[in-house]
Length: 168
Image (tube, rainbow, N blue to C red):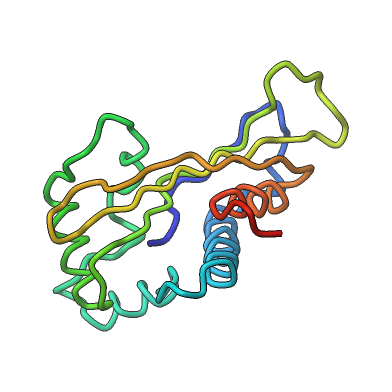
């Protein structure tokens, strides 16, 4: 699924780096898809661009993946996916050809705790990831992957690499 929520603390002053919302979301989707495909090749991945393409081809049947309410999945107490999101994900995964969907529910850049402000600012990327079994509409796994970097893309890259520990 595509990423729908991207934010940074004001203290980082990264407005110029992530101010173009659509461009930043697309770049984040690309980083996530590229790294997961390379680091877990045994999985048949369908990236955000493929999910969007399938959705456009099935207009009227499948919901726009960029307009689904996936950011609320960051809440730890959500186990059962409520409708209409449950129905939308099941329909979309039926068209894409899969049962499970990995949802990047949010990406937030924060100033590291207990560390003085550095120039350039070092930030921690917190990538909320949720794996959903679309047949039963339940969360099967969730985590927050973290990575540090002097720019958003380095921090995100390190966070995604932390999803697959033990690999270089």
